Length: 289
Figure 1: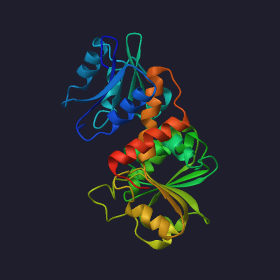
Figure 2 (figure 1 turned 45 degrees about the vertical axis):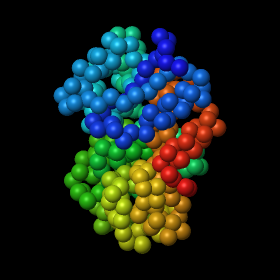
Figure 3 (figure 1 turned 120 degrees about the vertical axis):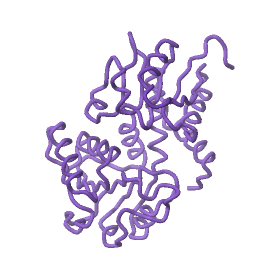
Figure 4 (figure 1 turned 180 degrees about the vertical axis):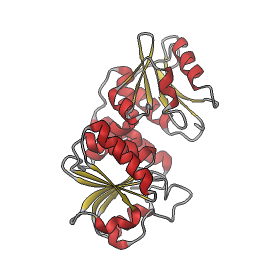
C-alpha cells in the first residue's frame, strides 16, 4: 500500500512505454515486503540533466536510465563507478550525499545471467558479433573477466578496429581482435562462445541473422543473443541447428534490474527469488521456454 513512507524508483528514457522494468522491480518489492514503487518517466530530448536534478530534489531512491540517455546522463552525476566510466554508459543511478552515483548494471547483469546458465568467460575464446554500443560494453566485460581472446566481427572493419583499440588500451590487455564478418573462417580452430550484440533479428525483423552461413555456426558451442524479443532468434535457431546451445537475453534484462534493486536497497536477491521473478517475466511476455 502506498503511503507517506513509500520510496520511489523509476526508469528515465524515451521511449519508455514498452519497458518491462516496472514488472521486475515491483515484483521484487512485493516479494521482499519493501515499501517501494517503480514507475517509468518519459524524458524529452534535452531535459535529462534537469530530470536528474528533479529526481534528487524529489528524494527518489534510485533510477534506471535507458536509451538515448545512458551517456548524456553522466554529466549530471556526482560520481561514476569505474566500470561505467570505462564503458562510457550508465544505466543505474544510486542516491548518495549531494546527488546520484552512476553504475552500469547491464554488463554485470549479462555476466550473472550467463553464469546462471553455466557459461564461462574466463579463459574462453569469444566471438562477438557487432561493434556498436552494446558490443563495446560486452568487449569491456570479456576483457575484464579474463576471456582469452575476443574476436569482434563487424561489417565495418574501421569501427571494429576503433572499438578494439579503445578496449585494449583502457583494460591494459591486447585481447580484442577486430575482424570483418566475412573473415569468420580465420577464427581459431575449435568451438567457441558467441555473443550476438547487434540489432539484427530484433522484433519485427525476426527472419535474419547477421551471418547466415552454416559453417560459421559449427564453430560455436554456445550462443548468447542479447535480444530477448523474439525469444528464439534466427541466430539462436542457427546455433541449435549446428548442435550448439543457445540463449536469449531476457535473463540479462532480469539481472541488470536485480543488481540495480540490490544497489538501491542494500539487499542481496537470492537465486531462488531471481528465478521466481524470471517466471513472472516469461509469463507476461508469453515465453514458453
